[in-house]
Image 1 (cartoon, rainbow, N blue to C red):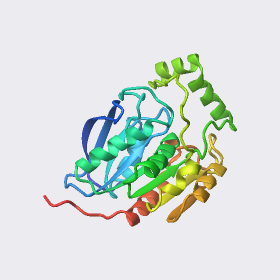
Image 2 (tube, rainbow, N blue to C red):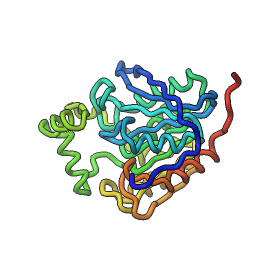
Image 3 (tube, rainbow, N blue to C red):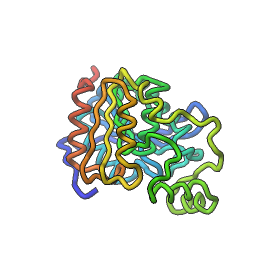
Image 4 (cartoon, rainbow, N blue to C red):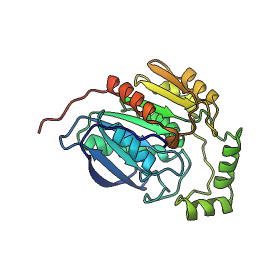
Length: 265
């Protein structure tokens, strides 16, 4: 991230959680919060090979703390979490484990902000589980198995070949399943209409090397109101491409849709 993200708040408190999904996978998560408990929380769902340890994710989280407390986590198969990555299928259980823990902690309004794979997970989670107050999809795919760009062709080698999975495990700390999806889940463009009545914001860069803008417009066209579409000039892909200006816009969009209240002591 080339720009520093301004966040005019005190250094947040940090609490680490070990969560267990409905299918028994352990999820490593961290909650950034202010001293005074609030009713609103934001969940950040990383892209494939992403982690809450990334300075890019941390900067985005801190930039959104004025909206609500922020929970970051590692998807299954990533870094400290258990299990193996299914690259967007079973990961909806990971996000539900995070959202459920936030509800247990007393948060009543929860927004999910997903990046790339995490964007597809956030849309599918909202459509299947419900319970989120707003959803933001950043750099998300509209359909599965897309290989129209060089970056995605390389990614498919990484997840589809034994040597590719070995490379990811050794050098990216990501363990990927060798099992194919059965059955294949609904694509984001097929299920985006079920996010409503929660508002959906679709964000995409016109310089994304993984997914062209047509993926964003497909999701947006399939969604029902309330919905918004932002095509960002010269923006690349996912967390690493998020600038301070974009974080400020996301903060404003979320702030207009989520209540800002502190819980009674």
